[in-house]
Length: 510
Image (cartoon, rainbow, N blue to C red):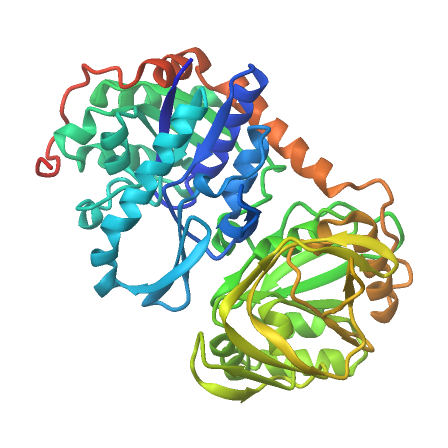
């Protein structure tokens, strides 16, 4: 077998990431050497990958999850271009793991040929090394205002000769119009590569959906390869915080007599929202993403997560009243945790001549540290200990501690201090630390005690890695049980089937 496939979608969050992961897991279980690929991702949820040269670099968190589904280590080439939005008008450009520029809508066009060349080269290398490469598109292929120069959706499919399937989320409503309209807005050459459809997140009696499936096949002359049911265990590793509802995960009843209520501040430029996922896997822990000061007041543990725009999001905390609510929570002796940018916001001062270029601004003053932003981003995969337990994670930050009278929250393996603690306030630059099971249990036990939740008991049998691997197996099962896998196999192996008619009006030829 040698080939590839593009998984496109009618919208963002239609199910491209999970379908790509599910196909990777299905192929991996059939003995196929398979890799995921996303030419360009726009997300502040990233993870550090160590390249063959030993250098750390960033890729989208979803591509690391898809690599796990494929049974392989993540590779910088799986997501060669990563755009990390810092505002509504600018994004940091990460190219093969390294931050190289900041772009706006105005100057992106001039940089795009270099990005496309890098992405095409990365895909060519992967296709030479793997039996199959399952590519994920971005947004929708019918973003007709962005088709010129596209190298992640139909531009990629055209360049690499890939067949494309289009996935639509029926939970949103209007899925048949979205599927039809997506194809009908493509040029004839692009339409020729669209092989068929997958419907995602269906609930109910499939028989009621059958007339729609028959009609979309009739009017487009393209098959529906299957209907994936909604599944409550598919929620880990969201592409961005928009993939989450107000409650993170599927909370299970407590092992003790009390719940632990966690409020995670949904910052405007929230990054690595996935840090809270490990907390949400614990029975009796309810994790809520919020922008409401009242929900901060009701919480047992408050988490200020990472941010791609630390100084700007700190100002937003003050403008919305959340900063006062956070201070009140901490003053009451309840636990408060800051992660990366959130840790920096809890400091006495932040000096930033890199991201916001606003100089020195006051932090919330809840931890005895001062932060200064450095031009070069710090990337790493540290290990160490915290609360007497082993812990590992990853670091992605410009800000560094310059002055401190701190008690460390964690320690690196060589004994160096990391983060800070003052009574019930904790801060760390490490993402992913709470995926370390014993460390997570000990932290939550201490947090519950400080919150006055003596009836809360951690579960000794929850393994975060096991929860994630189970979710990936569920995805593989869904693909095997609900999609026409033999037809998908033929697509991946043989390429676009050809013969489907053009749907008007179509875009101009390109």
